[in-house]
Amino acid sequence: MNTKKYVTLDEALEVLDRQSCYWAAEYMKLIPAADVVPVVRGEWIYTPTEPLGYVCSVCGKGFCRCNYCPNCGADLRSEIQPSFGFPDERKEQT
Image (cartoon, rainbow, N blue to C red):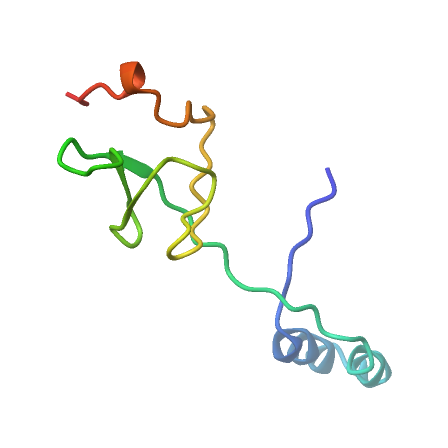
């Protein structure tokens, strides 16, 4: 599996400093930084009073189900892929 994990430059430099790897710290400062943001995860919540049937658990806005919330950008993918709100599959959760 090729999973990328990101650390802050300050954290990396602190570790190198503790290990007396000053030369490595100087090279580390030359590497261009990746533009990353934390992933916000949520889920679609079935709401019978919502005209589109579902609201985002992160921002509370109603939309048709999709992989990402169009309002807040939260990742709303689940293990089971959504059916995209066909009326016969919008059953009230008990």
